[in-house]
Image (cartoon, rainbow, N blue to C red; front, side, top):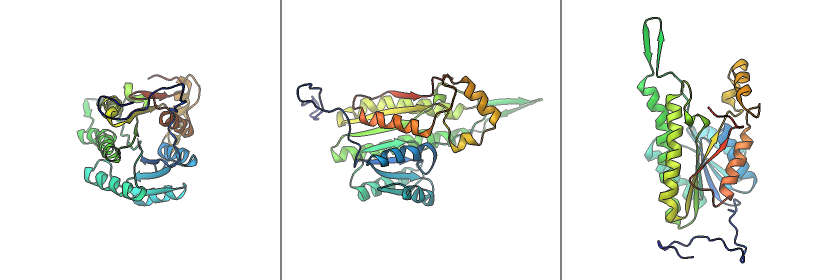
Length: 269
């Protein structure tokens, strides 16, 4: 079907049996912050079903090591908050793999702190540098990588998908002004990109994980973890594999666009 913008789009036709499922096998998938944790779990899930994986992480050594544990994967070191580094690494990925089909914007940092707090007569403020550092990675980095990936997808004249990793904290969470703000903004980017990139056959979606069993949560005191778990209707924390399954669903469902897939065990902050 020819659209008004001259782009060929898939349409539903029950007579022809046209499939709306993306075949992930052999697709080139870029995953940021994928040397460990959720990022690595998502990269491994897609690698196991035949995708070619480009892992981007801040340290080249850890990215290379993570990639060595997957089939058809290469690790790249880059600071996603640095536009020049991002543009260079996406050029390298495109050269090495021949194309870019999917971007998973997973990289992020967490630096908790109250906006203001008081101890005796002293009021302490959250340092602005700390607030900005979280937004630089979680929000600006997401934008820069999304822009770079979309540019390559458009130049390829092929369909693509950008998946941004948000969080249950996007609704606002105690002590997380910077993190919550960045993860809410990531959802706004997702919705905006779904509209802007539709003429190029590029979808944009987001995943909002709840409390997941990762190296980060493993370092939390057991009493805190127990308190959190009791608030989750499912009465347990999620696993990285369950987030990876959510990513697989988004990629395979061509009609999932501009929306957030919440995987949180029913918990709401």
